[in-house]
View 1 (spheres, rainbow, N blue to C red):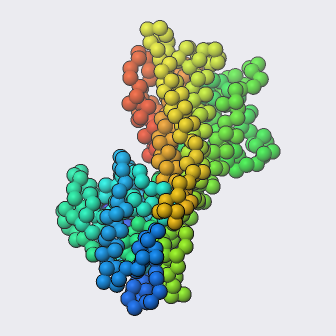
View 2: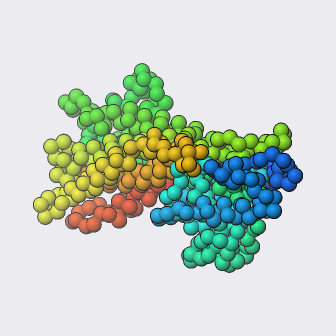
View 3: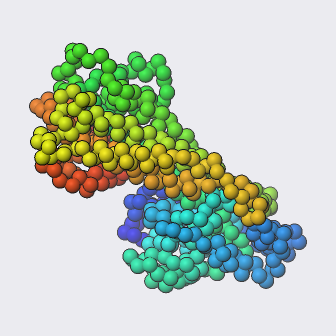
Length: 516
């Protein structure tokens, strides 16, 4: 059970972003089905059984083919074979695999969707999926091949194949045939019955998995941006007046207000700010003065993303849907990924802009024409040492790549299945791009934190505010002050990891209270 004993009971109705992160990234708790979910699933299964055995009308995916083959009838004796062949035919994804955390999240989300009782999958099939998740059987899932309508068909087929003893899966660090992986974990494959293959692959769970995990990281990144800005403001001897509440109450956007309050709190008790209270500088550059407006706009966009992704965590996205109270199986379109495609493209834009403005602050820190007395490239022995010259290049490269990646995938569509599926979302492409953008942005913010920590030390013995100082001190536990040049790539990655895993935010929160 991957070292955990507590269980997160799946109901299909109340899964949260933090639950997904806990299971997919932190290694626990284990996930299991609740009794109400089992009852709903059994009731839905009865509806499917009636449709599969003795019903005269065609029911999509139960006694018909798929996509353009919807008009092709399947004899009752071949309905189980139909489900197995569905998995095999659809498991044709290509390219590198999804990150392990995304696969674990998708397993959890697919199980939760089936637990709603609108798909008709058997309890034992979903329990096997959860046993694989809890025991560390991780399907090998290529990341490319989903167009994001009819859901993530190819990825979910790769995810499902190990359940029937096929495909490939990781177990204890070894990539194995699916059946071997199950056996080593003490599990046995399932034999699919009518509609179960379709229930396993018709959904948006890889798009939603990428969105859920990226959103947790994006929220942490937004806080890191406020911390980095505060530390840079200290180092550049900027003004706190741009952040006072009287300004932002005149334009009361939620994200802007929160970011301004955070930065003010991070600056509280600053001897640096107090020392130049009466200086003759009239205005700071936009990358400092307008940080709440920019950071806040990203925060507001993330609110929209959270609404969409948070809803999707507990949505029924199968086709056909089983409406138990009506005794019906209805073919509709909840599998279409357009809501997630838009949200994932928006997430990429939101975090990209946090990195974009951060890189401009790095430029001000290292450029002696802009830094108000700081040494060029933040080194005391310029010429022999290059200091922070090249980290600014790296930040520029990262934000430039982000700009290309932020071109939306969600506005594209290429018809599939001979025109039966004539509009698709390309949401998986949106998710893959967002995943790269957020990794780039974490590294870009890490560069600012490193540079600002170096820069503020040139103002000693004056100390920054309590919150900015906590950010500085956390950085120093991961990266000693740069005196003579050394490769900074590992330092950048270490600080980026601290942004990603929440260590930076935890250190600052412990100093000044929970940031907004």
